[in-house]
Amino acid sequence: MKRLERSGFVYGFKHINSETGSHNLGYFPVNNNMLPREKKYPEQCQKAREDTLEIILQALEKWGVS
Image (cartoon, rainbow, N blue to C red):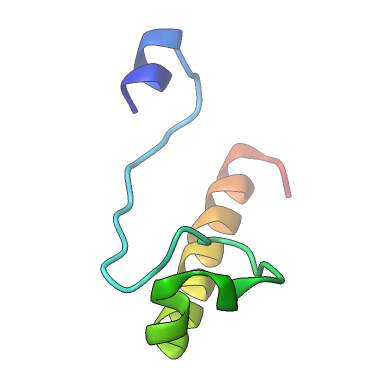
């Protein structure tokens, strides 16, 4: 976030910390079963990916990149 602020990023942004997600947020990667959290909490990680993807799509729509 500091890098975006320093560089004068012109679009809105926010930090999102997922309590249940893994490193793969916002898209549906092929190798989910390779990450420890994905193995332990597959349903929660799937839900976190879906929720984050929706946030990303809403932001892109607001930016006019739909």
